[in-house]
Image (cartoon, rainbow, N blue to C red; front, side, top):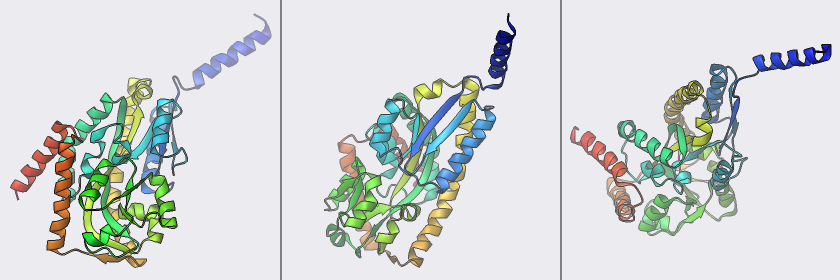
Amino acid sequence: MSKLLKVIAGGLLLAATTLPVSAATLKIASLAPDGSTWMTEMRAAGERIHAATDGRVTVKFYPGGVMGNDTTVLRKIRLGQLQGAALTGSELSVMYRDSQIYSVPFLFRDDAEVDAVRRVVDPMLREGFTAKGFHVLSITGVGFAYLMSVHDVRNREDLQKGRVWVPQNDAIAEITFREGGVDPIPLPLSDAFTGLQTGLIDTVATTPTAAIALQWHTKLKHLVDLPLSYVVGYVMLDQKAYLRLSEADRAAVDAEFAKGAAKIDAANRSDNQKAFEALQEVGLEVFKPDAEEAALWRDVGKRALDKLVADKAFSAPVLAAIQQQLAKLRAAE
């Protein structure tokens, strides 16, 4: 072998021994703004994954909707341009109907009920996503959504006068508002702020942290202090991309995302409380319905659930598991 060939062969051997084996890059898109609690914890999880796999797995995040809205992101996953996404249940409901089941209006009374139900039902939702070709890395609680509006909303009649936004493809929100006599305006999440700016919409249902993170609070003046629904977010990977990782690397990815999700769950509860107070400090007027008015709102939620069940909007076993767990909890009170 010539001296030149020996040098080349030696260089190739050195490269082979120093480069990660079966290196993989997982590109994950999100609508969450950069700098948010979610992005901070997920980036930290990505760094831990890179270290735990000796550089074999790199996680790249694309926050703030730079990869497009939810429909575009899911299409890019199918095309292999992205390997995963972080989206809410409503954004994923077209692909998997049970993904937004926690958002049934007035389903939960408090965080304790959320925790008890999720311990039983989260594994069922993971199995449902697997059947659709996705591996769930984490399910995190975004928090309770509240009605917020440009106009004062003290009853259903006030709400019926507004231009109410619902996330595109969110069947639960659409049916709920229609049961309340409202004809909602569906828009992608990425278009909602523009809608508030132009007056296309003037009322939204969202969490306090999202209202601030997405800058919606700059266009809103009133908040109804009655938790409407519970929002969850999913981080998921295309199953094929996940299975291309080695067993050890899959375990590292799962473990680090689970750690990140636990931190996000805890932080979101604290952040939502602080954000609720911050919204009042910047001038949003808070109205808390009395017991009679709250009961009327909850009746709308019950009618919406009845219609959703009649329309088979959810799989029966998942809904039954939630209802059984809630009944058990409330019977023990």
